[in-house]
Image 1 (tube, rainbow, N blue to C red):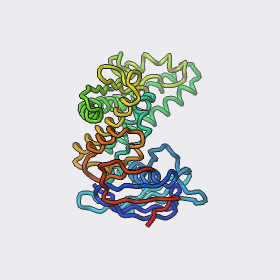
Image 2 (cartoon, rainbow, N blue to C red):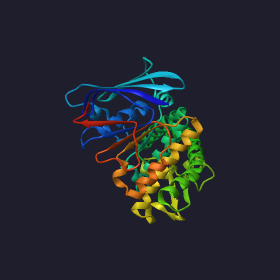
Image 3 (spheres, rainbow, N blue to C red):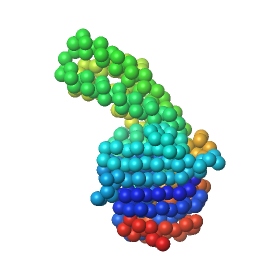
Image 4 (cartoon, one colour):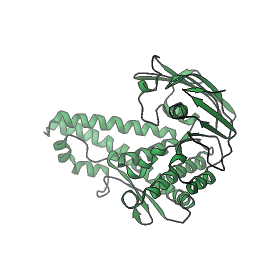
Length: 358
């Protein structure tokens, strides 16, 4: 898998840019605000139809423009694929090989990316939602059709929560019968997502342990365990029945995969509360490296690696270790300072004011 060419039109602070990318490492340099992260963000958008910075469509369109366009030419299994995304406020239209209406799962199958940012520390320090999103992103990277599971969970939860709000805390016969329907749907999709999360967490643990040991320079056991919110019940359906009165009182679904957590343990201690900042940062990198390797091993093709200013938060020792750990394949790295020693890119790009310099 390789992104051969990228076109940007009115994306963030980029006006009109076109560039060819080599199969190896591209280093993107320039001062803060030059548009380096936006370049990686555009590549990520081609794969997921979303911004890894959490930005909505209107924030991705250049000031004064009505829409942004991102195009990418991808080489996959000897075939050339063209991905096109037109982004405007509240609307994104994607095309794959000129066919409109491409779904996110279609684009994920055409182009996979692994994104590393300094904000990855939230995977360890942040709340359960960050870790659920991380594991669900891995789930969809491994099997793009599982994106339908994630969308179904969102739909079922939205409908069930609407019903709970409308019930106003009262359990009438009609509310009870309708809740039975939504409980059945939530139990089905929730159990399936829970099983996928548990399997991926188990597969990740040894990969993360290996990556962390190499980053830290000492062997340390890392635990990655899925903790479902219904762990104390026989199954999710039983937990939902037991929580019905509480759900009606609070007017929200209190049990389900949206309440799960992924427990991270470092050397036998909870990483979120007991690990140092440096250990947490190394663990966050190890988690990203673990998913990248898992996807590469199972899919047979490494994702395109996007490294957004990750070396700015690392000391020289950890920078060297990360360089040694970087997998083979296409990668783009951004930095506002000098490249770390040991990095030899195939191509260097310099940016200023949202423009690629000659």
